[in-house]
Image (cartoon, rainbow, N blue to C red; front, side, top):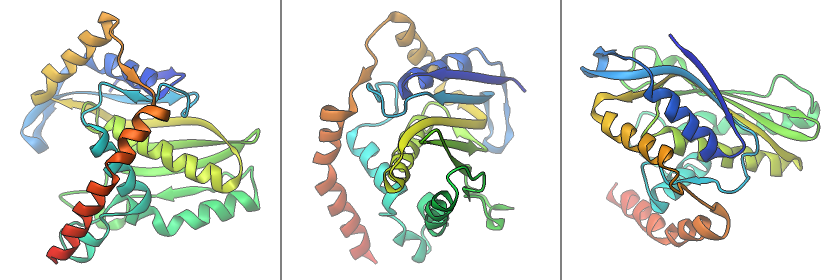
Length: 245
């Protein structure tokens, strides 16, 4: 299984390199989903996670979906669905009770190698919907917070960018709480894949990358405002969902 390592100054730069590498992968079977896929083991490193431009035009979504996902990941706005039995878990529910430990451990020893959050639980064994995100580790080195993320499985075209964006926002929250600067963001997916139904989507992404088209937006003073404008609608949706119960 091919190991690929790419690095970029910004999130879009690293993500676009990762997509380009995946397109060159061979097609292999994916029996669990009765399809085929392209697959590599991918590690992409973002050298300056908050450096603009942060937004890729090649992510499968819009300002509302990105803001909702950010809130789901950081604030647990959909955790109530677990108590209702509609969802088995959320990523927020899996790490929320470990967040305080990360802060305490890095305050205790800024050079610690113990600031780890495990997202996988024994419940995932035999589950039809095991967590894709498995693990996070944080390091403070030279006054900067570095984040190392592991996914067992990551949909390159429809999930990876949003995953990385939200996890960088979580990294920033931790860095701000600790009063340190942001360091690198490392995203490793043991299976970084594209399903056969999305091969045309991936090919279209690569064609746009190679064309030299402008494929980025700034987050600050551009997409952050678009995302903020979606917050009332997201709040109304959450309230409506809660009231259905």
